[in-house]
Length: 242
Image 1: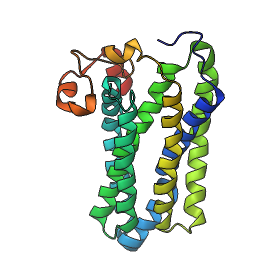
Image 2 (image 1 turned 120 degrees about the horizontal axis):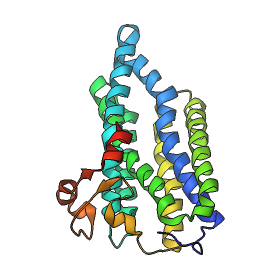
Image 3 (image 1 turned 120 degrees about the vertical axis):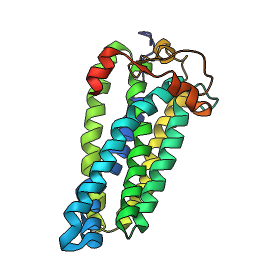
């Protein structure tokens, strides 16, 4: 657990907020503008609604599962690259790959694949950003940091729409987001490494994600099958997830 003396500074809070902005811009720029335009271009008047519904629905189903799994993996990360940070690296790479697929997608299956990768990937850094508040923010700062976490979501939604609108709803919006998202997420990576702390006790116990985990795994991403085999949701977590 964080100690009262372990207050996080304004730059760390700003970095966390920018990370939230990046993730939500990458989700809602496409959801609000880019995907509907793309569905209209690919599906035409007779099929655009069905295509958009399929893309968004499959993506939401993937996100529903991806977020807690990424959280579990980040709880178990003890890599030299930084506690939880490997999930940010891998998730961001997957999400950016999805944006590149969407940039060039000219069919329904390609659009579904791209959006699934975006949802799968960026749920990784989002799970880490949420967990970092429990890891590093003392109780007396959690109200402020939590509120800015929420503000970051709103700013991200607006920013994503602005980016999409600024390029006329075209595929170039994916390219802009593919550059801006990792750039903004890099801020929390730098800030986190500049203020190292001992991994919190709940990371080993699974408290960050509401699941119980057993055994010892020095790096969750190196042994994912072992970690997933230890996945035992608590009753409270199961109700919250449902």
